[in-house]
Length: 277
Image (cartoon, rainbow, N blue to C red; front, side, top):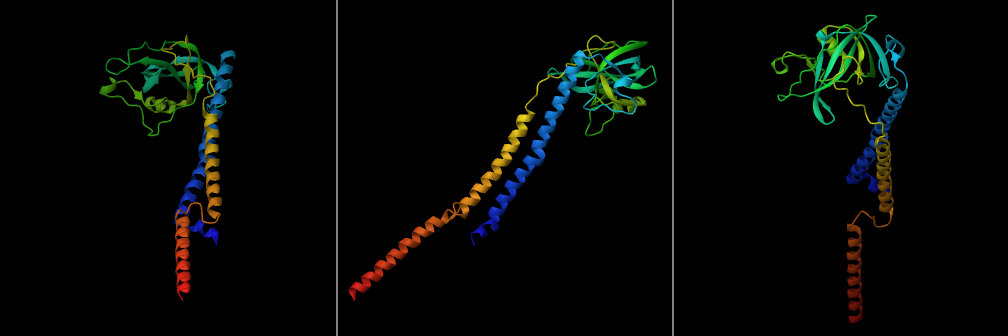
């Protein structure tokens, strides 16, 4: 039966590799790129809306108990309160416009008592790779306009620290409201708020992302194409192998040729013996 070749170890290994690759393309790689494309579309929509829409009060955009998500991230909010500079933390190992930087994170207590984290922007590195001196947050009550941002995640879940290398200044590895909350023993609502240019307390305003679609949709379609090509290639060679001789069995034609020559020689020898008799 010609289908027995499907049970050969080499063919089973090839089949496993092809189908595993195709499944990964269809269920992991392509959906991941589609999700990235959706996130980029939501980000672009939020940024474009924020350029024309008036800032919303914090309680209106993010009522108590809600967290910053794809539908609210990057939207402008108006927050009134006072900075808590003694609870300030500096985020290290940042990159802004291709250069190393630090981001200054200062809690702010709103007029209703809620504490939020304000990203005041960035400062460059000094000659010793420390943070350049920066002005303190303004005292008294201020009203700031900022962009809602979701907390970053540190895979190692590291807390803020201060030692000789930081000059006694608290530093963190990510911009995360809960890291700052633990460092200052504060109850800070999740997420943080990034200041725009001209706002009270802003340092170097962080640049906004580019509103382009990115390559994610084309990458997703490419992974689908790769998975389909792998399956079609496997099907093509399977059909070829089912044909007489087996297209992938290189030894079969050679064996057939040698057998034919041997038969011809045997026939000649028999014919010669008969002629002699």
